[in-house]
Image (tube, rainbow, N blue to C red; front, side, top):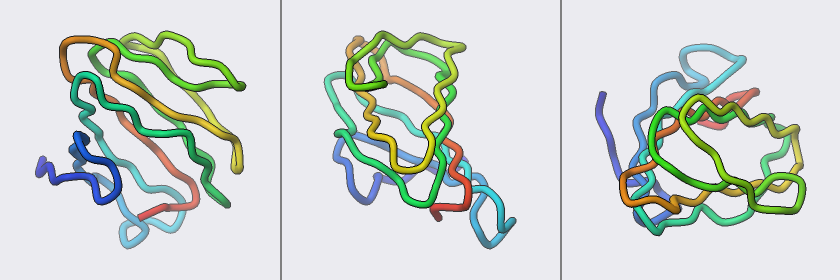
Length: 104
């Protein structure tokens, strides 16, 4: 896997696994969020967004509030719903992100 700096968020690395060039239905990335880094509240339109936590400790902004997330947690955000992720631990927070239709 080749990781690059996220184009919008400092302290976040990403590896693009599936793009709109591969399929017209989904894009998939692996993100590594460094300790203390927050991906701010945002939305996607028309994409739905799902996140699977692989490792690390963090928090996700869900339904207007922050809640803890841990390895094995799965989050789903319909199109237009506000969400965010932050690393509240001491190790990198690693997660997979799926967007449909493809974001990339």
